[in-house]
Length: 153
Image (cartoon, rainbow, N blue to C red):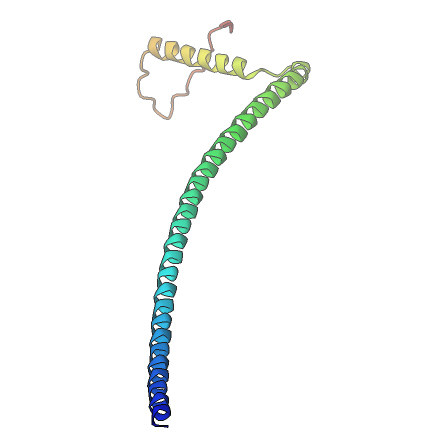
């Protein structure tokens, strides 16, 4: 019996050491799990940062590409608009010219040519005319007849 009691005492000690070892093992396992979770979170956030950086880089490239495309499209639209405007002006000039001829109205070039010619004649007239003496109110101006000229240019 004494041996049985001694065995029970040894068994109790073994059981209590086993229990304390199990508790220590459980604490160590929990610490290891916490450390693993932290490292996993750090790895995930690093990967997420890398992924975010890649996405931002791609977004910047996409923005640049879109700006270039928008500029090209804008230039294309402007050039098309200019070509269309030129075509419309030419068509309008073709279709309006017969009406202007029927109305017997001078063209812009004819009016400009006449204006230049009048300017030249006025210069000639002013350079040939002596300066008149000051007039008194009693004097009446004598009308000056314009010199006959031919208008051709």
